[in-house]
Length: 331
Ligand code: 5AD
Image (cartoon, rainbow, N blue to C red; front, side):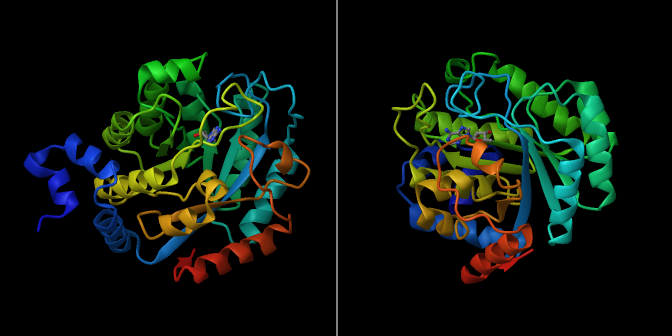
């Protein structure tokens, strides 16, 4: 019998109908098994752990789903200074992390002049730097790359241009994708991604989301279910479907076998069991917060149980134990 992957690439071009069929849930067993087998072929039995430092929760944008949106007056805002950011990054490197994601809202306080010394000093520790600081112009992206940033995350969020506009008053899908393509052209390892279950999204949208990530040729992609945040205009919307999220991750593994695919935090927030399962349906990466206590609680994109805060080293050890418990090897 033909595999789903063979049917997906039948005739030398990607068969959107095969994506739609698999997204509808008609072949979950085969889909997850194939994605898992391919993941083992390309990534071995390893789950990569990345540290994430959320250094500012200020944001100039008003994205309707996100708790950091500028209009959310209920959030107490913070910015970390250069010294504190670099110190935390060093602690993450010492705890064994090989990659640090530096994430913030779209906070114009962090100009290129403020970001450069941060990137340079962290680069000296040898840890790989992933930036996740929103849309930036090309000269800024180029200068940060030259200073030692290795990777860049910028999710397209939804491939439906009308839905995109409705959710993101300040931008367009075309602008978003143009920045992503610049990131790729400059030479960053490029991370994309999108949400499952945004109000108004259909299976067709999800198929287009997958095709867009494929056409950009993303090196990484985070797919997470939408979690309604009571402090946003989408407070009363339904949460995303976790099983549909698993299918989308599995299909992306079939489309881009070498892609780094995280088990997203929002998946764990909605259903811990699904987050365990996603590691046997295509995912090979997990992120762990190293954001200092006091700030961490305020970085609330969507509601979720924070959990007990321990030291960076203890938290990393606990995550390694979790990965071993799934019979996978942490790195
Ligand atoms: N539910 C789930 N994910 C969300 N994100 C933002 N808001 C939400 C939400 N309410 C995701 C977006 C963004 C990433 C940092 O978090 O995909 O890129």
